Length: 554
Image (cartoon, rainbow, N blue to C red):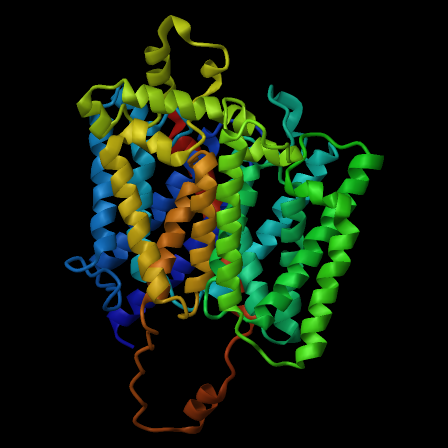
């Protein structure tokens, strides 16, 4: 192995450590001192810049990515990324407050700096992330998902393990690991994590892998039953519809989906019992309402699994045609119901579904107001601001200037539009929104062409879930960097399998050489143990260093 190969292998191992640190360790990074988003923003910013600089140093001394990783001249994704960066920089320069927009101080730390470091880490991860990382990464993410869910449930029962609430003015469940509250972090994290965790269980083969990935899937079902955010239901629903339409959707997939359904209904039924008989705090998510029929749903899912398992006796029957029909009927039904509920005065009430179908200022915990004032503020801007925006994080400032003396107490509470696309339109203008949609479309189009390649399907479903979730949520600094890393991984997985270059054969095959060649491959613990330990250390060091580097933001 020559020096270039050694450096590339070191860069690949470093990329694996980064992915585990960012996707699996960073969500658990907590800070007892306050609930400010600056804590996680500075930590992930330091982590991403540290990795990017390290990879840049390796590239300077000879590390080179494999061919096809960064085709600058022919890759539309790289051009779209450049457009996103340029639009972010331009909107910051022309911002109502360039300094605040650079750091995102007027919003949730989603300013120009986040655009810059996420673009840099996207390029670095895309250049060196190993193709055969998904199985271990999904397992580590499953452990994180289980831990986050357990901590969330403990807070529902008002159990605070580390006493974070002592010096915090805002007491909200799950606050101690979510620096911006449960709806802005937990739903965003679960929106991309659950599709990866669930798909790992859907694709698992053999008893050992089924159990290893089944345990996190069980906690994923619990997360669906407790996380109080309708955006999560929207994201997971969108991912399910995409899954139904794929040609690899078979009776085996449906059988595993039935098992996941049984996990959800069991947990929803249990949580319904706890809400009825034991004290809990916080709201009740829409999916949790199915806890009223929890046991019925549980046994129905088990019956479906039993019929498919014992009736087909191991045979797999493609179901994608039926899946596409079901997806089409569901989408058409949702559109028709929404139109009838909003434009037919005599349309009967559908109970709690009215809160979803009928759009007004109260929709989605007053998201209707946020959307209306965001759109009206954008329409009130001069042409050049319509094109380039008022600046990242300047939504609240722009709305206050637009409303003037007519601003209401409710309007004053919104520092984000609760819709990423509307907020991009206002803060970065038509140019910024178009650049981001171009970036997304290029990646999803490539994923559609390479769906059957290993790793493409689960990462695509995770991104679809997040992108649907973003329609009613906020782009925050503790979630968006992970999404950019998933976009980078998607590009890596869409490439043809990269075969390792063979090492030159020894001139003399002595006994010692034969023994070394006969050694088995390292096991799961030996392979991933050092990566996990390195990721934890890396996150701890970067988290501590961020207080020094970005101390002026605290």
